[in-house]
Image (cartoon, rainbow, N blue to C red; front, side, top):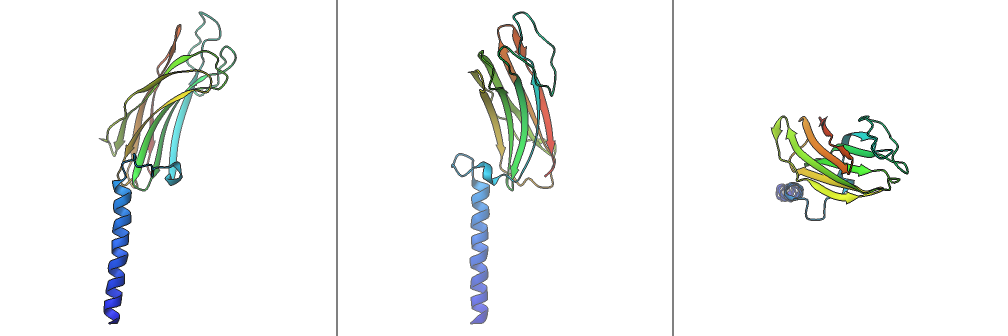
Amino acid sequence: MKIMKILLSSLIMAGLLFSTTANVLADDGDSGKETPNDYIGQVSTAISDVLPGRAGMRPGIQPNAVNPVPGGGYATAQATLVWAVARMDGIADTSLSSSVQSTYSLCATATQVYKNGVPKGGAGQVCGARSGGGSVRSKKSVYEYVFGYTWRLDTNHSVTAPGYSWHPSLTIYATP
């Protein structure tokens, strides 16, 4: 009888463990269960560029700098890899600082996520007309075990307006 109780307890525990694992791996990200609270690691990089200070004036690109614009402000491109145990998210953000007064066309693309050099897909380009504090985001989620692998994210960004055009590309790596 004691052996039966131990066997039954073991089967119940195995069933619960399998059920929990299957639910995590089956989550497609559209179920509403995906939250930033389940992230356990992150790496990111960003660069900023000056927006035109005066009509007809176009300063050069200044990576990792905060640059003035009419009324103050700057454009930023950011690439982020963030992960949970069974999901890697590759995120491309393109944004404007809150003091930007003009409207710009912003685009972001999480072009490709790689796991140990193997392409795992990318997300489509997301674009929109934005002004001060505005941003756009493109995100690709890969539902696989993340630990012990080298992950790479390639992103493309675009910020344009009449007389201004900035198109940076970023690459970031993580080995959780």
